[in-house]
Image (cartoon, rainbow, N blue to C red; front, top):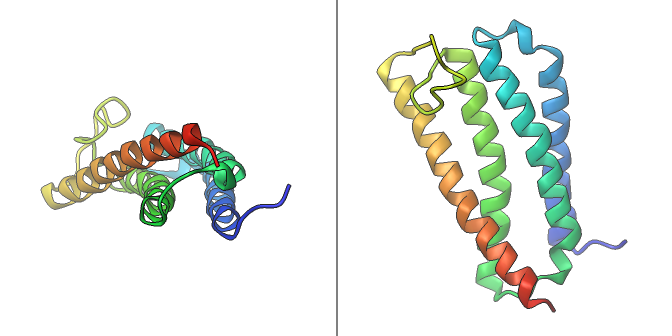
Length: 141
């Protein structure tokens, strides 16, 4: 399989995220909130695979150049951003954005706001990115 330039770059982002998740899995029990760290580990591994799968199908998309750039950036930054937000919550004890994994933990208000902005912003970007990706894939080349 030959990947387009954008597909190859997206595959590298996905592979790096997958690898980061594997390393994080080795030290989950070392985080102040191990349950949140486990969530971050699973997010990175699953998101990394999803991004690599998107990269494999990238050349099949039929999108305008601006929509393709938007999709690439929202997938790449959204997946990494979500992992960063969850990992930050595991380190700081922030729990407002992720109350199930954060049960029993809390952080200072500025940290809670930061984590919430990262998690919600990344999630919204991913909703847009995956919707446009699916639309472009359905249209085909």
